[in-house]
Length: 402
Image (cartoon, rainbow, N blue to C red):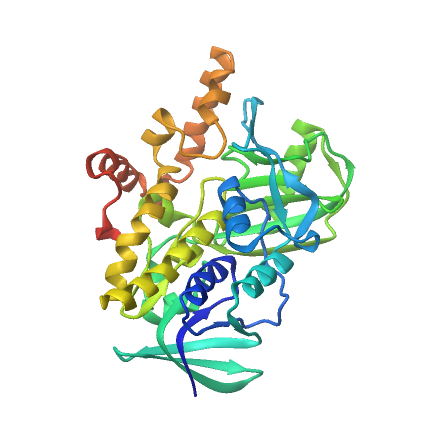
């Protein structure tokens, strides 16, 4: 059995950020990854300016192999059923288009942590002064003994399931799938990430250029038919945007936990086990989770360091420190912040006000109809409650966190 200070599950960007903080503090840290690195990662790869700054400040300039073509993204374009479109540049300029297969490995290696790939997490046992982590390495059972464990293994986190077996049943789940098409004709600007506020297309619909092909992606509640949803989007793009594509050459998809950031239902772990990144529920409004994964991951590492220095429970430290990232992420979904502030990294209010009053009315009407799509999940009262808490508390209540 290997004895270490910290075991991190999942070789993700949040894991790299946590590992960097721990290694810098002199803590022996092992990162477990069930696949062989470099491994494929389902992701658009569109990084926000804040995430880009984090990578530069903590890991240095990205190598070319860690980028797709086009290598950068200038901003986002919102499209509405009324055929109004709004293009918004990111504050601070274009940002990298990450190739997650190589960018994740690069960041993990730059963190300085010891990497054990082809090692699958099985379960854990928190014994108070240490945690036993059970894994399988090439099919053989192995164990680690750690003072702390950080779950950075994505939305379908096995670490979360190990400590909260009922949690996956307590939130709605969505399927997000994308297909890759050779392009015949595509007027959509390849320098932008395109998103449709269209309830008839799905809960999350997007398209952007990658490596000479066009991605067409759609998100919907679990149980719906991916092929049918995707076909509807392709037909819509052809009819409304003159996009002509070859049949898809390949596709990929995964389950996603869209709700926690929207309704302040994060899961941060218990005892000596911390949950971070998208496993904890962090997700920005346009579906970009990398920037909040990096920052929340770093905070989880800092919480472990502070807990040791101050001889305090790590959960106490983590929940105090993570409140800043909760504010930043949940603000992006807060209707009051959207209406009266600028919580995003592109200027939606300015783009809206640049429209004529008729188009502004159309956009607001279309956005409302899109929001109603989520009515079945009974999130309304939680959204309103969280929105009102923000000015009163200066943040969001911790009572809904696990």
